[in-house]
Amino acid sequence: MIPSDVPKLPGLGTTWYERGSRYWLRRASGALLWFVVLAFFCYIALALYGGFRASPPSPGRARRAKRDEARRSTGLAVAGRVLWLVAAPVAPALAAGCVGWVAAAFAVREYPSEVGARRALERGRSLPGQEKRLW
Image (cartoon, rainbow, N blue to C red; front, side, top):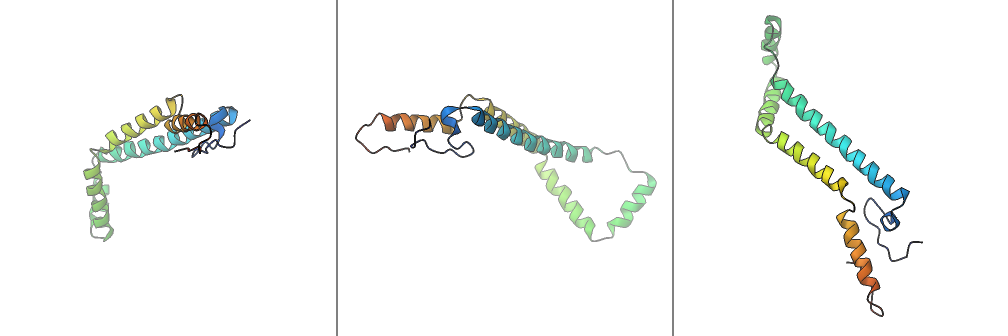
């Protein structure tokens, strides 16, 4: 039975207190969601890098590119590539840092918010006669 003064944590609710099957299901689904998002992020980073390593164009493709150069959308395409050139050196480090952070966050035994809530709950119970505070 869960006491009434157990705080609800974001993403976990009160399941962190008993750590039953619902708790582990929430943790596993949260980890899976983050890994899918990060895999997509890493895929996009690799696809954008692959676009810069394309082989030289054929003569027909070069003519089409020259013809498209006269259109107004070419400036936007060039602006997008310039923006990516500025962000490109940082993107792999950012992707690796995000993957490492998420792997570390979901590999720990307890989330930091659980530890804080558990300590606050213990502190509140050790103060009989006083108002229980959960912060």
